[in-house]
Length: 93
Image 1 (cartoon, one colour):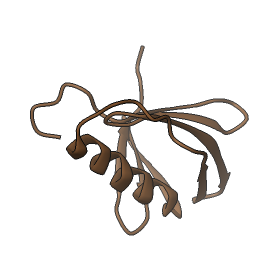
Image 2 (tube, helix red, strand yellow):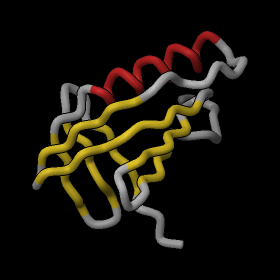
Image 3 (tube, rainbow, N blue to C red):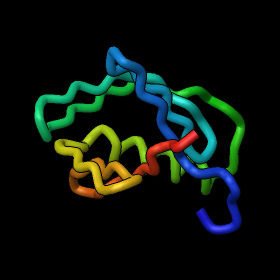
């Protein structure tokens, strides 16, 4: 998002639980991996006060995340592939 220092990020635990921080809100959920197939299921996001632009960004991001069907590791990045591809950097710390 232009002018923002905040970017969406995701933590995945060993059991497939996810915590996703978006442009404004946070959502928890679950991922199921079978080979290169990926299914993402999210719950209800928080309702933090934010600008309409950030709320719209959250909604678009969440829609793309829930439509993911595959994943691919590429070096320090993981791509979630669906109608829109989402790219996450793997933390190195």
